[in-house]
Length: 635
Ligand code: XCC
Ligand code: SF4
Image 1 (tube, helix red, strand yellow):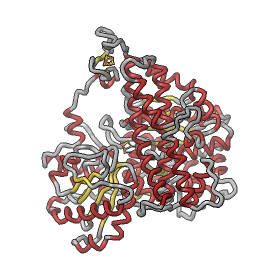
Image 2 (cartoon, rainbow, N blue to C red):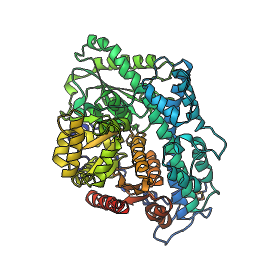
Image 3 (cartoon, rainbow, N blue to C red):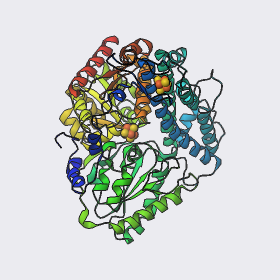
Image 4 (spheres, rainbow, N blue to C red):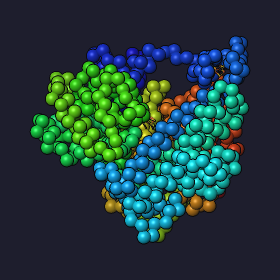
């Protein structure tokens, strides 16, 4: 194979193992798919009804309308917002599960869970306008859960989702309400997208895209409550030191990877592993259980417990190829069906846990809030059994791992800043933005994609921005990339940060008793945790008395692929942020849609998509956006 797949050396070491064992990886399947359908890539293929599939000829020679008369603009817009709806549904379904668990705790059920962060519960209650005087924690939890669940069920369209309006700047909330894109009900916004894109409904691309913005803001609502209520139940992350990449898998331990997105089960698996560690040792594993993470579930337990990250999305098949992974426990989203095939070649037990995510070849251990601990114990037993089947001759653990300082929740960042100025923690940050030590802030988010060399865009763009004194934040598989490649370390700050940025990170680090700076990239969590970054941005904007679109803050999703990423990206744009995409979105078959997304939205909401596949050019463009925003603020 003559093209490079990944800059991750652990992946590079294991690909020949796959080849030798005749195992197809994501990259083999990508190659087998070439050339991929050009109509699909442009977004001009419609399969919405059975008169189709219809496709519009992008060169203008063939048909320009589908059988029903839909043109390229209608088709592209409809396809895009259906993706946004799926993304919003995924994030908010995750949020619903967390809210339901909190409700159960409030009712005195779900004994595996408790309220771990009382202060956060109080703070959330206050934000949602819930009176807490004289109420006990359980009551408050129940009311917070109820108000959160109202955001899924409210029928009065005049009352907006409370998690949305209470978390953005006032100007932003008003702007979005006036545009008619502020959701009143997460589920209704998703349903509305499905209904308006049914055959013979909305055909106006502008109107369709506005429906997409509303869906993206429903996504925002679901993400926000997922993060905050997870903090209430499992604790708000604080900085800790851990490590990342396949070298975290241990030969003399029973290795269990937690993979997916929802922390409800993985949290309990971590608890149970501590309880039952002796059983693992008795089975012959000197180091007991070793829990490692993949994708966002991995990130959740990494942020809260310092569980090391095995890998991010695109290389999720690799842990099995080490021959030392005894079980992979998956919940929902971003889990490749290929895992069920690949694990057949090894001893690894693949365990699905959610009724909506079953995979052929996997063992299903159903998870419920009520029986969470039982499920976790059953999973550990399956892992012990699998460990007995392990073939020592096939073990091949790439000895690559990097230190990663993680756990930068908004609270942790404000806490660190408060060591410089206890009365006004944001002031040191603002002062340094104004004096130019920090030129701006970039939030890296989103996935890996086979369309680019894995992790490369993240690393290249980040290094360039850091050298130009941009403060870097990251979530999701982007954060996974940075942690695997050693950019979440103090050494990276010393090596790559520009002088101004280095001085600021060092001042904060030393005020916090670190012998040196904060890490170069601050790990803010999983994809739903993008709202952590937004909460910091909103606080900064409020302090400056401006709306979000005025801040020298950019978002970059350089390897984006999932429908959730479409929703998050559109949400960032709706909030007023310039959002870079490093893969070509499947919309370019419509000039109208492309122009709206990359340009016209700027007038409407202040944010827009900046598409640039070349990492160097992308960094330059992001830097000029930051400069333009600074000029706008007269700094
Ligand atoms: Fe999935 Fe969250 Fe994308 Fe990673 S970043 S590939 S969505 S795991 Ni969310
Ligand atoms: Fe074709 Fe219209 Fe049906 Fe789409 S909705 S498949 S364009 S007939």
